[in-house]
Image (cartoon, rainbow over all chains, first blue to last red; front, side):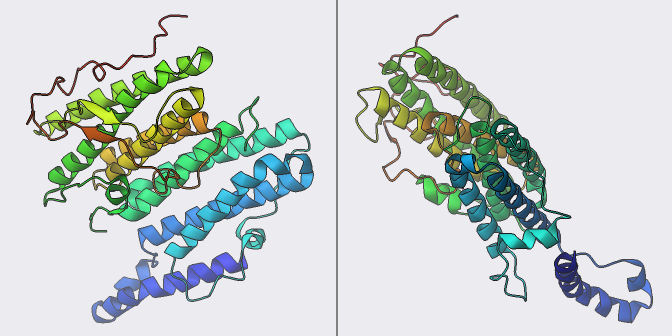
Amino acid sequence: MGRGATRRSVLAAAASLPVVAAGCSKGIGALGTPPRPSPDVAVVRDAIDAETSMIARYNAVLTAVPALAGSLRPLLQQHHEHLARLRARLIEPRASSQAEDTSSASATPAPPQAPGTPAAAQNYLRLAEQAAAGTLLGKITAAPPSLAQLLASIAASEATHALLLAPGRRPG
Amino acid sequence: MSASPSPSATAASGQEAPLAGSPADRAVAALQTALDAEHAAVYGYGVAGAHLAGAKQKAAARDWAAHEAARDTLAAMIIALGAQPVAAAAAYQLPFPVHGERSAVMLAALLEDRVATAYLGLVALSEARLRMAGARALQSAALRATSWRGAALAFPGLEPPSPGPVLAGQGTTRPGPSTPGPSTPARSTPAPSTPAPSTSGG
């Protein structure tokens, strides 16, 4: 929670500058409207959080079912690529190089509990991929064009992950 | 939030999308790029299906039909915007010789990569309906590509893995028949002399 709150407050502070300036001339108007980051910043931030939590799920599964490592690692690697590309879109004053996937502990409530059998674990990830792809698709209309393209591509990638994680298929 | 289309999609697909002024012009250009890719896919699946058998041929026939439907939908959308849909080329040069199952499967995956890239142009448009249509079509193409390839890509459409050249149309690809082309855009049969995957029924 700490890291998320910090990031949010930094972004909020940046977004509030023009509002405060306008508020000075117009009296108390600015007090009623909590400053919000611009929509695309919020979209990128949400997508980063989603990727981070997806990576946490994969790591939890790999810990619980090491036998799946061979098939899951290529998919996990692609999530790291998604995350890196999304982070490159977000200009943060703090360098985020030290925070790789371990930052999930602060971005999400707790490390996810992965099922212990290969089939259940695979299904667990499949459902997560499907949900993530659907969520991303729902955001593309709120994004500027090039970000929309990135989100659509990542959503498509996650949908294909779900396909490979389907029962009876072995990913990778 | 200005809606200037990113060049990534058109640059990657090698299309010369004229970025004219109005949103309608940009929409038409993006739709034409997607239609062009669908034309090539319809042709290419005809080739691929001829070299496949059994379940793979069935899959090719199903995907081929999907591309035909997408082609007709795109043509109708372009007509609705008052433009003339690009016609299919008379023939397409294959990126590599296709003479067996392996190369046929590779061709199918590559066709889907190319279609995925083409639809990214729609995702960059400002109109939400076209954006979503593009994103969904991109996803469908990525799913088909993964089915053929047996592997996923990190950035379907954005970073196609295929180093080879895309299908190059030979013949008319301009809007309107500048040369006596054999096909009309919307309801043409697949490219001439192309054996269709024949799996009817069952």
